[in-house]
Figure 1 (cartoon, one colour):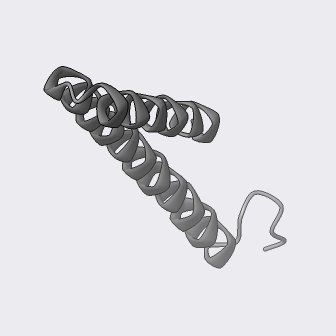
Figure 2 (cartoon, rainbow, N blue to C red):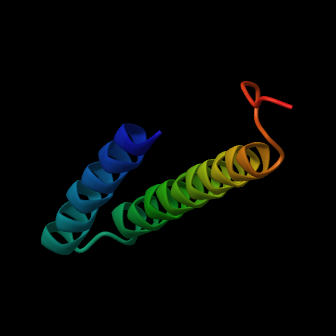
Length: 69
């Protein structure tokens, strides 16, 4: 997901440059939409990674799969 976020950031930057050179508001709105989509994707990715880390931490505290009882 990080690669998709980086691609969206690059596309957003390209749209920003296009909006600034042409003076068109449509390109600027496209930049905003792409950047918001990238930010949401990055947030979802970070939250899912955090939940995965939390579940692994809980598993290690509970003994995990390979614990000897």
